[in-house]
Length: 84
Image 1 (cartoon, helix red, strand yellow):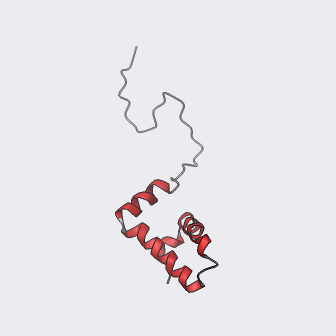
Image 2 (cartoon, helix red, strand yellow):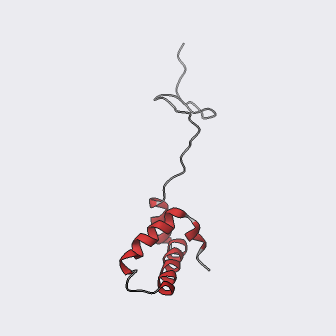
Image 3 (spheres, helix red, strand yellow):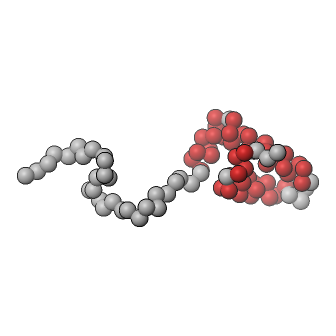
């Protein structure tokens, strides 16, 4: 059974690209084992997890709302003094 982290399209693509140079030298079972090992490393090893966290694309707010410079998001505190 494949490692659950491989369900993430970003991770699966990155691992497949990393293993691409070895595809003609390994059989399908060996490639699947290598994929699982790399996914486990990214999950279980603190350095691997840090690399994944740094490389993984962030969630993007697609609400359509845009803040202009100097605006404060709704619900956030405004530490500036009010004038007038």
